[in-house]
Image (tube, rainbow, N blue to C red; front, side):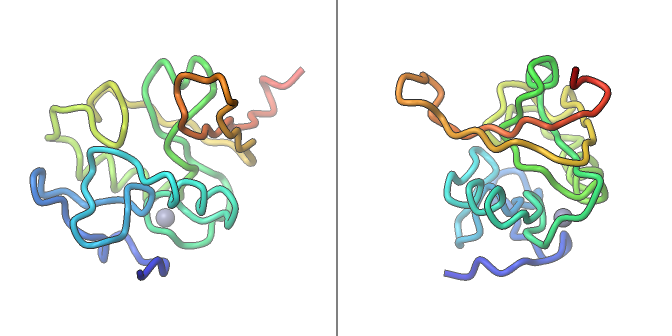
Length: 142
Ligand SMILES: [Zn+2]
């Protein structure tokens, strides 16, 4: 299993949509953009690597997701390089289905940047068993 970091240009292509499959959605042959890969998501959090390309993160961190995720400041997709998120949104511009485990399509996604984040694992009673990323935005912290 090859989980080595790669560049955006080297990401595998989803067979159905013809768009790049980000690191957090899986790195194995046959990985698709439909859902996130929980192991890769956790790896992103613990190793502080980009959810899109899998390489080490710097600052700022970019968080991408639905408007609802932004309102809650709680994202399913791991923090990523700003450039990677921009490339991803550009590549996904024509995708009209909700992908990457989102409930809205890429055209409706928003991006927010932050310097740090909190990794939140699901609790025993949580209906949504997926881990979450909460950006720490200085202006919003009391
Ligand atoms: Zn990246």
